[in-house]
Image (cartoon, rainbow, N blue to C red; front, side, top):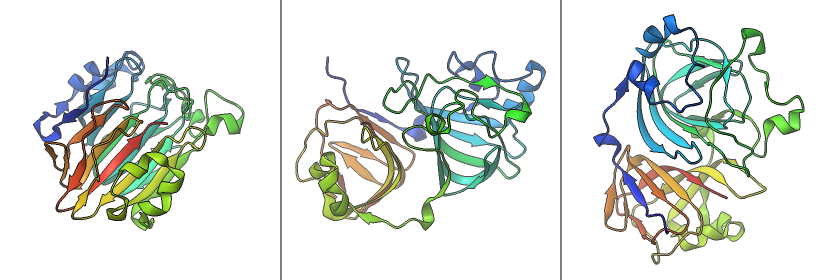
Length: 282
């Protein structure tokens, strides 16, 4: 059965707060969040909106808001690759370093870390879930001692530990240039169905083996796909700013579109322009 494309209205989803966020976490998180007597205080400063949750692969995308004073109960690692685009504020990640608004990271499985924020934080947090191509396992949380911060708990070999995309600890996207899509399309066939003359991108991470990648895409005013065609790859797009239309659906800031590889085609257009964070499978 062909999976249908979906639009998720982020503004229509209520924030989940406190221990309610713990109840909605994947099975691999339960019992691995730290001392139980600290959880109520810790998660009183954690709020989230779940935009995508795939129980088959455990891939999930959450809009996460950390209130000032939040601190992880202790160091941990994930069996899944994790990535984040910081939208507002910032946090300090023990074992890695600080991140702030506009920064991006991709963390392969196994790297031990702990996050805290003094000022508050808003970010789009993605657990890749089970993906053979990206050497990613299920979304989990595994508690580790403080001496393991900055180390990989799963692999001793560094080449294996950094995985096929590498460990991108902090990428300041505002300092990256916008690259015209016409310059990239010859080597990325899926892009040829887009209105490349009115599109520019910043590639944030890429799996050179499979072609899977995460990027920022800037749709110029007047963008319109030449025809409604299937991309042949799963695409997930989160609207960072502006407005974009997918077929008859109009999306604004905070909305997400999920287009499986073989879903019915829907031409993209943006009369006024938009910036999207996009994930494209290999």
